[in-house]
Image (tube, rainbow, N blue to C red; front, side, top):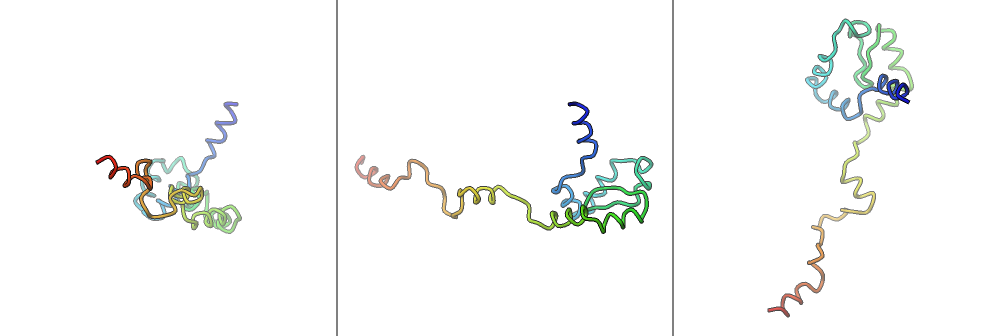
Amino acid sequence: MGSIRRIKTKRRTRDLDQVKADLKSPRHLAQHKGLKAAEDLPGLGAFYCTECAKYFSDSHNLNEHRRGKNHKRRVRMLKEEAHTQRVADAAVGLGTDKRRPRSSEDGPDSEAMKDVEH
């Protein structure tokens, strides 16, 4: 079981939110690239697909990758809006209106009860 987990994490690419941050800010991408030594990377780190966060050995392999199905799928996924908590709540039926949520004390008879107590 341990060997399967090791293989899965070995080939793991960066998540979509990390790649979106790379595309928005070149500083974020430079920080990620700075973590790895160029000597250890394929093609000395010169051929990098930003959308897929993968290094390639030469420009031909990079161009072939960009024409492929996996790259195009990843680009399409990056164009979609990220899921937020507000969207998740709306899907379940919570928080769809802009009014403040009513607490248990704010029942319809709460005003009438205040008048009776005084």
